[in-house]
Structure formats: structure tokens, C-alpha cells
Amino acid sequence: MNAENNGVNTPLIVQNEAEMDTRNAQSPPATVQPIMEALHLRKYFPLRQFKLLGPRDVVHAVEDTTLALYPGHALALVGESGSGKTTMARLLARLYEPTSGTIAFRGEPVRGNSRAAQKAYRRHVQLIFQDPFSSLNPVHNVRYHLKRPLRLHGHARTTAQETEQILALLNRVSLSPAEQFIEKFPHQLSGGQRQRVAIARALAARPEVLLADEPVSMLDVSIRLDILNLLLRLKDEEQLALLFITHDIASARYFAEDTLVMYAGQTVEGGPSEEVIQRPLHPYTQLLISAAPDPDRMGLDGKSTTTLPARGEIPSLIRPPTGCRFHPRCPHAMPVCRERFPGRTDLGGGHWTNCFLYGEGNKQDKGYEEGEQDERVEKGDRKGLHPAPTPPAPIQ
Ligand code: SF4
Picture 1 (cartoon, rainbow, N blue to C red):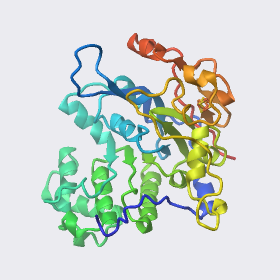
Picture 2 (cartoon, rainbow, N blue to C red):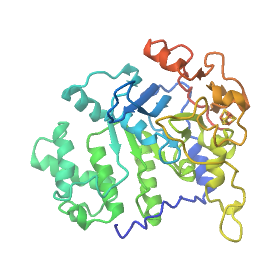
Picture 3 (cartoon, rainbow, N blue to C red):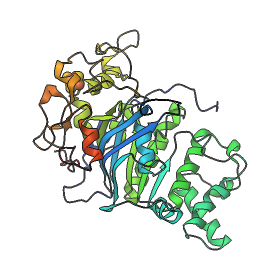
Picture 4 (cartoon, helix red, strand yellow):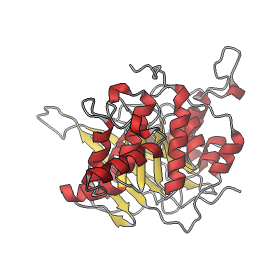
């Protein structure tokens, strides 16, 4: 384990409320078009097993998930480990093919699996991995890691152009003096410096969309804020659309204008981060927030004084619970929660949730019963599935 990583996924506690309020007021106006959309994405992984009779078991990793990313705007995808967040990032990066659903870039469905199509897509959409220790090849230096995307995407043709752009990239991610870092190998860098190189490598393609999969969770607490601030600066300066995946709802509030909460492969609540985190409505979001350290809710022993009484653990996704997958843990579960997944109920100001406590869902989205959605998707019938989120209105 690197010296900078204490091995504990300590949440980021943000003290500067004024700074946060300013940032969260930057929601895009309703006229801004999303640069990337995921529409009703679903991913099932068949299990490797020998079965004489019946279909193979599958892991239901992502169910009917819809989201939109906007230029200069960050969306946080929050949930426990195993909730499907990373699968979602890999679907958007096209490392996995969706079982059903559509990914659209600039309004056009993304199609084609050829090398040329993949390369063209990666020019626009880059993924930053969680682990800076394994995402860099230990036998190559920083120059090699950064020159590859520059050459691959045709941004540098000569060694002089290459060096000039690599130095500029290192300066952009605050690795300076850049000349001191360009020939270094990964083992000569700290965890934070490696993650900066990984971010520089993603920027080398000149993308419009960055998918950051828990970019700070493997780093020491003391440098997490630096990396988050770096990503925020790049997002603002270069108008990048950012998907920020995290299990730490406090850092979602600090980092992203909007938050989407995911549980066991289903999205359960979403809207402007300030609204979702200050006024969580879905019992799972309330549980996540009550479990996050908050100085105002700490007892003398340092433990939260208001953790909600949810039972059990995240369920198996091979045979997930019917209806709302949170029902075995939910203190408010009703008989209907076991029968079908609730439709999406809009609560105003871009805030919405999928929970029967707040209604049966909007007219166009009445949820689905077990098996019903499978048939509809297989038949290509998209009516009644969750609509794309509307851009949130600016917070007053
Ligand atoms: Fe709980 Fe039912 Fe709401 Fe699911 S739909 S969170 S089980 S009340």
C-alpha cells in the first residue's frame, strides 16, 4: 500500500458552506443541451455456470438507468459498493456493451463497435480510474503515458510537439516544474501525483466528457481535496461534462451540481445536490446521509447520533428483491413495494424520487412489475419507462 493511502475510505468533510453554495448555484439553464445521455440503460452479466436446464443466471447490475451530462456541469452518482455505479461508468465509456438502452452523444445514438468507432468515441469521452497505482504501467515513464494519447488522436506529430504538449499537460494538472516529472516512473510518484498523471492522460485526448470513477477514494485524506479542486478547476476552465462516482455523499455535495442516488442497480432519487442532500426523501438516501459523518450529528464518542434503523445489507443482484429492491431494508416498506418498482415522482425544482411514499409516479412513468419491464424492453417498447431528467432549474 502506498504511503499516502491509509487504507480507510474516510469521507471528505467539507467545512466551507459559502464556497459550496456558490458552486451549487451553477446549474445549467434549461436551454443547455446535454452532451451525453444514457437512456434506460440496463446491464446484465451472465454467470459462468454449467446448467442442464433453464436459462443461465445473470447479475442484474444496472436496471433502467437514465441520466444526462451537461458541459461545465458535474453529476455525482452516489451509492454503496455494489450498487452499479462503476458498471454505469464503464457502460458510458463503452468498455461494456449495454444489454438494452441507448447512449447518445450530442443527441446522436452511439453505434458501432469497430476499432475506428471506439477510437473516435474515446476522443470525446475519457474515464479516470479509481486506482492510480494500477492504472499506470510501472515499466513506462510519464512521457510514455502522455505521448500515447497525443499520437493516437493525432494531436502531436513530432517529438518536439509531443514534449511541448506533455509539459503543458503536466502544468495543467499542477505537476510543476513539469520538467522534473516528465521522465519519472510511477514508482517514483506519490498516489496524488499518479492520479494527476492519470488525469493528464485523460486530458491528452482533449475530451468533452470525463467519467471519474471514485477518483480520490484510494488517496490519502490530506490530498483528496486537492484532486477534487483540480477536477473542478478543469471542469470550469474547459467546460467539461463530469460524471463523479462516489460512495461519499459529502464529497458529492462539495463537487457536483446534481446528484443521482443508486441502490442495487436502480436509481432511486436525483436532483440538485443541495436539494437532495439537505432534503433527502428516499429512505435509502436518508440512510446514506445519516451514516455519513457530520460534526453537527456526532456524539461524544465520535459516532453519529441519528443513524436510521435500516436492516440488512445490499441484496444479491443475481436474484434481486422484487419491486423496489430496497424493500427488505426499508423501515417504511408496504405490500405494494414488493410487487412493483415505483414510477418516478417529480417533486419540483428538478428533485425526483422513485418511492411509493411520495406517490405512484408521474403519468408517463408508472413503474413496472417484475418481468413486465423485461418483456417491454425485449419488444423494444419504451413507453412508460423513466423519462430523461430535465435540466435542473438554478437554485435561488
Ligand atoms: Fe421503502 Fe417502498 Fe419507498 Fe422502496 S418504495 S423505499 S420499500 S417505501
